Length: 391
Length: 83
Image (cartoon, rainbow over all chains, first blue to last red; front, side, top):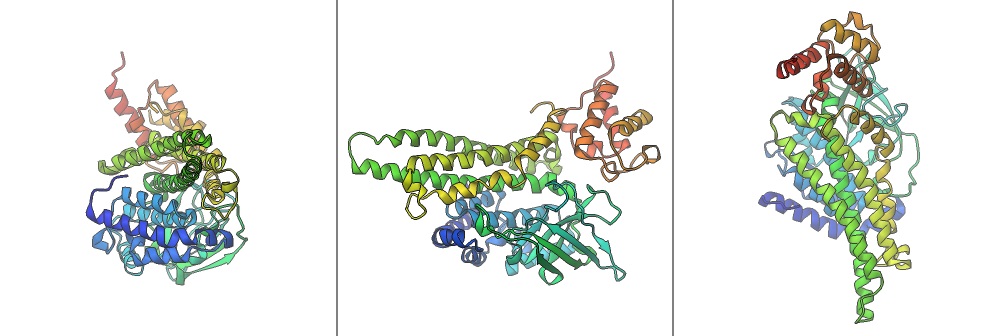
């Protein structure tokens, strides 16, 4: 995760400081109360981190995608929920920035994000689609005054109550097929959120992701020019899988660091022979290194394919398989590392109030296999493998 | 070739509209073809025309209409002359 440009280095240093000074000291309180990590997000706003990826000509930080990924890793080491909020916001920003196609409304919008550090949540999952993001039930409807309206039943909207704006997938029109999808960006003064569920989950508690019925009336200019299937294949899916994997790696790395601190403390108490758990730590390191290698190579492949003219390769099945595999592998490996850390730390890791506690890490990473369910991804992959050649 | 492609789409594309009435450049995905159905169309095309789509062609835009599929098949046949 090397970053060469000074600007990128300064941004990463600022995020690391926020992670240490705000995310780390509040992580347990955020987890216990299942409350939004507002201190961390406010501190990120103060650093201009919410517009880090936006080009400088639109007022943003202009930092590279690799640096955003590294920032997700750093936040993940200190507070998984803060990292997930940051990552999800960046997924929306990156999807807009890569596909706005010079649309004036979206250029103005990204300038507003840069100026006001607006936080964007996504409304992509929907009741009645069986977890398939490639289909929508809710449709955008034209009104007599040329405005557009929609109503969408969302089973989860992460940090919906704390977001400024919503990134929403819909069917293009009431008579469109479920797969004929568009993206709209609805601003908070244009929308209402009616809670349709509660939020008391096992992990990632600070993301505050209950269900809502989302209603909004917007202008036609707020439809992203690029159709959603292309946004999804070229940006949203690979970017989601890469940024999520980086923060899962961050959580797993902190669990490993706590296990290592535990072993060092044991070794200092009885100098001479290495403590028996040192061997388990060595096994754990190889598990962590597998995760790290998968995350790192996927990032490199994505950046290479993104730099190619027209980004043609990103829409191929071979690369869809590649980034689907990243998601499956990382979401399975991260909780495995956290469980291994618990095995090293024993009761000191199991208790929630020791320097070696890894319960939150384990619970947070257990959400990974549910964020787009792994079995759904396996179904997609099984189909793609019938026709893809050199995988 | 157009009619053979049209028949394969009718058999495997699971469209929600009548395939016979489809314009050559009509978007098959907008006509209800799912990703999974598109894989079945690709397999049937490979079988029927005795070709293999290389990975660079295995993407949505190549299979989004009858005319796009026809262009891809012609490109493949030009690359590998029939012996």
